[in-house]
Length: 100
Image (cartoon, rainbow, N blue to C red; front, side, top):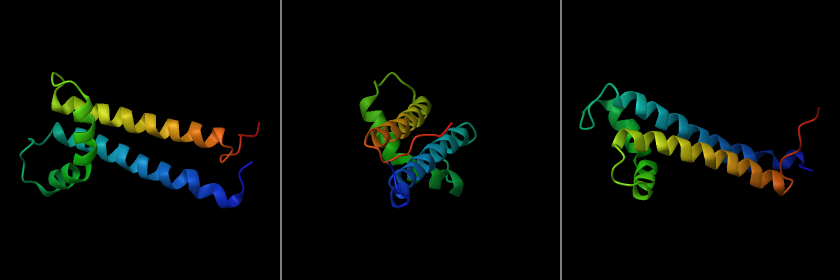
């Protein structure tokens, strides 16, 4: 059973993964408005923050997949990582069961 001190073990990594996921979604939505080589600050910030994740997913993805879809695939992978994190920590008993 998880104690009060183990709360951060799940919440901090989950928060980081959630921020990455929503930033990737923001990048995808901005890619519908801006060109990939745009010099707008908002686009450059989103691109620089999410480029490491997108490059990692792009390395694993076949070359026939368009670049915009790689960003959506990155969202899916990050979402799956959040689910995996939950189940792993739940199996170790670091997350208390839902009462009901």
